[in-house]
Length: 470
Image (tube, rainbow, N blue to C red; front, side):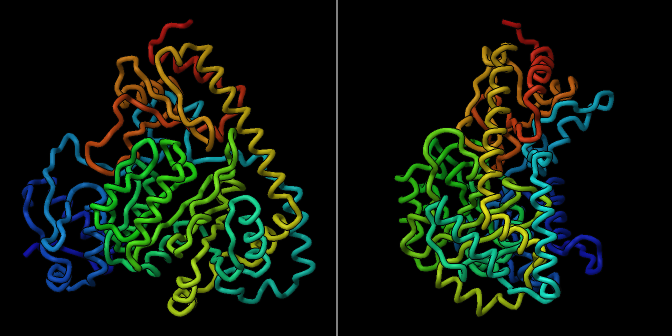
């Protein structure tokens, strides 16, 4: 029987200790390719831990490609090659981690927004108003799903701008999408697989795995998540970003959306988690309705956050539960207290009710569009577009740059970092081992950049990548 030494009172959670122990054995060859691992219950009994602990460890190993799962047979070790072993995604600044002599001067990270344009004076005025009018009520425990005023404001916003018809009772407000995703794992159950987009934003996969779910990476095509592969995966829940995929940038067309809804409708325990994280920032064409607006079978849970539209530190996100899931939530999970202070909820509610949120989004959309245009102009002026192609400019706060100058992704990233420019490889967003795009591709966020920074930044990139000036 597989034996891993665990420290019950250690700094790391038990599932992470187990995950790291099994991974180490695979990397060292102690567990051979094709070897079958003990069942979750058998290993849990042997190690005297919960089945959830083993599920969390196995789920993370599946997500990172160390294991494969075969229905009704169990878990098997995947072939491992040291030079291509999956590694944790580095934080964005790590593009320059090996460059000691020069710091990053221009950073195209996607993990930031322009907080300098936050409407501080308006927000401060509303905070003072809330303090005066709500008084001691701010100190009382709020409704577990969030204060009524904020849920009403969210419902009106969703109806006006996302085509979603919902009631305030269906809204659950929480401190970040991470917290709400954890709640959903409990609500929807850990049994069966959770499909995630590959490539995609890595955090949801890690959160699902850490909550004991089996994560199943599903490849994409030009229309988004491949429903044919989803059918074969035996997944029960699919986490998707149909309005604007990160990082590839495509919008899922209505035919693919209906196919996805059809997949969910084939079984009573199938669901779709629609992550609509940056739907506000669309620069051309008509607004894209949410997938949830097409759902007639109560299969879609809508998830969104104010992290991109206002500020990451606000830590206010929300989800819209279908009526039957709302009943289950209230029966099983409503004992959880609200994780967002009432003070911030009342302030945000007034900010939305009085039109400040809509005006702020309009201003930021104009600002970001100008920065994007400056980026594309500077890239053309410096000859970058003679050796590469941009895509994804219609929406969101990042672009893809596909390069064809003979350099690999790691080389492009390293040389850029040596020149003082942070750019990030698309390959780091893939979950399946060895998966990558046909040509070296970089993910370039611009929300934290200024328009006047683009010319010097791309001048440095042209020199770092040894490109001829036009």
